[in-house]
View 1 (cartoon, chains in turn green, purple):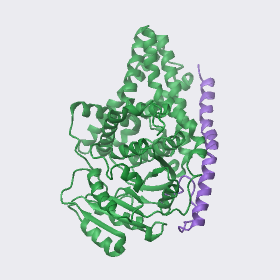
View 2 (cartoon, helix red, strand yellow; view 1 turned 90 degrees about the vertical axis):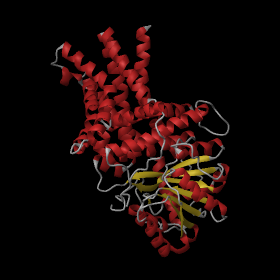
View 3 (cartoon, one colour; view 1 turned 60 degrees about the vertical axis):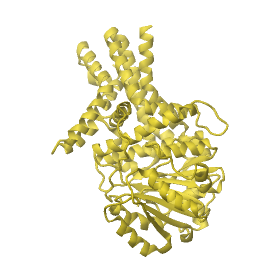
View 4 (cartoon, chains in turn purple, red; view 1 turned 90 degrees about the horizontal axis):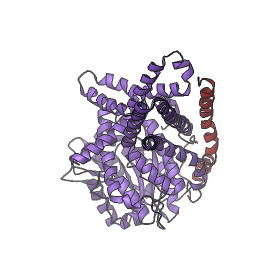
Length: 481
Length: 57
């Protein structure tokens, strides 16, 4: 009985990679499910690009001009920047933009800022929807730079009246690109180019990219003409509500834009903590949608639900799995070796296939982020994979005792790597040791860091920590590229 | 700007209907060939299995 329970707990730790692997195996079906067969080139609805801005002078100078020079009929593309009571040069930058672009640039300044992105967006939506001009609203961020053809690629899907929203591929675009942003570049390719394609295949999208979401006027009105302000994950709430109301959400991997992402462990931690806490809130609110078939939407799809919960519960699954492996080691050494090798075999095979597939999806990511892709689980875990795959040359000369103790250490590390990632964040805050922390990140792993952040989100939610909106700082590194 | 991108970008489109159709055809072609990438991604997996069989003991 005990060994069965332990075996189940160990297997649960392999579930996230197995679910991910199934998602990748579904990818080739995207040829039939990409919605490209219902997209009509030359569909040019009147679009207002809505940009919330708080102290964004460094990035707005560039992104406004790039957006308005898109390959899209100029008389059908406008921009509204909502200045969230900025204290930097944002008002001056916007005044200069209005002078350059005339009626195509509109601005709105809020007297009271800092309430969060959703409040800022709603101020803009109120103005946009009060007039008849706009057919669709493209919600973006001030630092996002669209490829010249991206808006047209997004708009072509609106020829299908069933579509309520379309989202683009957000590419990490900081130049120069330190290791962390390269890791994010790879992660974005896996989470968007792969996972969102699979979500297209099953017909259920988890999240419109916050920096590139094209919403039809009808959809916005059905959502009450406003973005939900009671969440830290307003883009996810918009995505799910759109589908609950029976409208389709489409991801177009060929519509691309660049965004600047955090370059330090601490900045990444704060950004992702907000995302993870937002997703916990979304799960509380929408949990009845998962695993329940509906005629209106496909959010009840089994793979979709498994992917959602595996992401959310990853730290729990890793700790359970690690603890179960250690307990098995204490009870029965030969059994523990069997579980340990089986656990790593599933994870290693899935890791190699999904990593290779992701790099094959995008040459740019492959060129820039191949090292970050290989070290995503951390060099220590990669060493364990090599050991499990080819134990002969590595541990052939070890005594039985040495092999067993190394195996125990590897079992503990499955969960301890999250603590190590948390430690790196603390180390980065120590003066003059920030560089060392970032250098050690590939050893511990970007994946364990993300897992640790999710665990920190549980703690923050349990403690009822403040939900104040904390904006990620943008410095204009995309514009410099 | 964004490098080669996921489908390899053609010379800049000018917003006209024809270039949009060319782009759409290119994107459809890319999606139809995803299975080729799946096969290519299976190669390192097979190498891994071979290495495991080779150096298991």
